[in-house]
Length: 177
Image 1: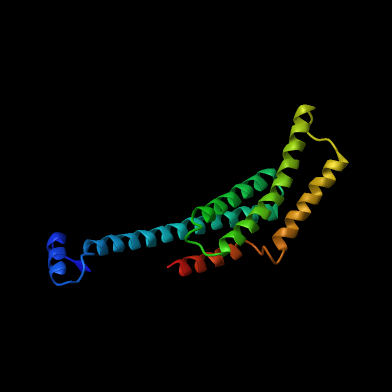
Image 2: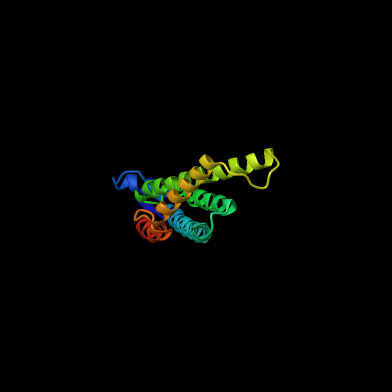
């Protein structure tokens, strides 16, 4: 039973009427309402954070598609990490697709990581021997292979750009409401 009056008075009255003494204060509904408003604000925040991170991912993807500059690869890896972290953070508000989407981002991150590691290694060698350029056929083949893997992933049906993630955010927020 719920009362807006004094709990002690309500318990005494309920006991006299044989209704039981399990009485709740009506302010519990105010608390529940406040919790629901907070939850909706958190959902809006999660939606905003994911949208911003996906916009950044789109920008970095465009840069990677146009050039294989090591900095563009690094920027894209950073822009992949952020939505991955946001999805993990808001996992309780995001339905079952969250794990699947984090896995896709992980694969994308891993492919970029291979290319980034080769670029760093190549720069290290050039710096160590104090040269501006040098040809290492095997290293160059590995870099070319990593670039082809990136292009393959960016053009695959399973990736199809950051829009696959952007489309699921709408469903996350709608399902979580």
